[in-house]
Image 1 (tube, each protein chain N blue to C red):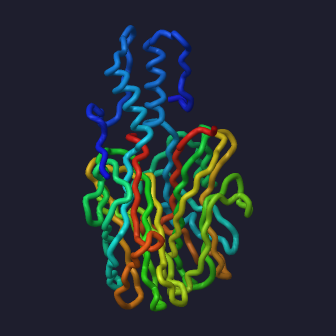
Image 2: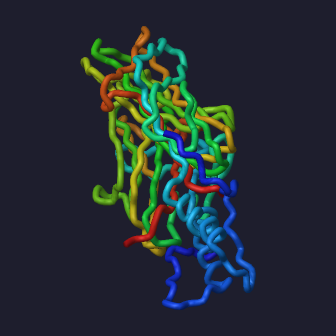
Image 3: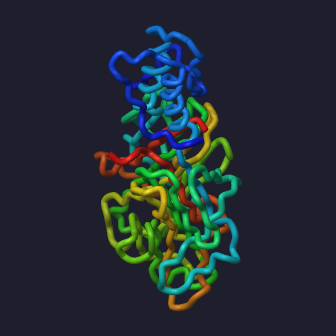
Length: 187
Length: 195
């Protein structure tokens, strides 16, 4: 589901400055008007979701793994837990982890976004487990805007304190853990 | 750079000129490189003690550390955490609040959200409220985050990141400052003009 930018695309983005008496032709109109405008309508985006239940050990930060992409228009994901920026710029996004809590679990749940550019977490959501059993407890974390250089990546990581390993819940989109990122500008 | 939120019209038989074509480039340049963008994060403890049982504007500062700080196209007042847009239009908002407990970490309710033009019940564009009873008395957390899309008129409309707690006392719960990823933060970016 990858759609690399059109041939001739200038990266990083810099609008063309037309010189006095410069006569446009179909090539320059297509490149500087059509293609730039087209890019406006399809910013680089990637969304992936999990397809296999994953064991999250007790009190251990774990990178959430994904199995399929719902959207990827610039080869930003190729398996595993990382989504890569292919163009430098500002990015926004969100992720969610769904825990299988049919066993009426306790403890806290932490979901964070790890950014390789700063080699650190940059956003988090954290809450205590609710009382009683629930098939899938999904908790989201939003982030942005953050700066990413080309080939920097983000991960969704989670941490839980139930006292034992907890599996993530998969099976339908209401459960599958996911991660999404979108480019919003080059500067 | 002045905001360019409307493309120029071309008249029938209008001759291409550099000025007219550069107006198109200017719109692209403004959208990609100069449209309003804001990201601030709470960073210090002395202004962060939360009052009891009332919504409180989270302290924010535009500074870059692990968290990228940027203010382009907004008026921001640190002392009141008021963020005012200068370009009218629709904005995406990404918000996060985090709590640090010196005591009573497992008592009461915690809440967070984004309010527009005031802090009454009807002013909130998005918020979340929950219990944190599973924590110990001095546990850090919870941390809530979310998104909203709001219209700002570019003159008087403003946003504030708000926090709330109930433990029965004041000064025992702080806006998180120890870990940058858990701190209150607010991101806002222009996405389009009104129809």
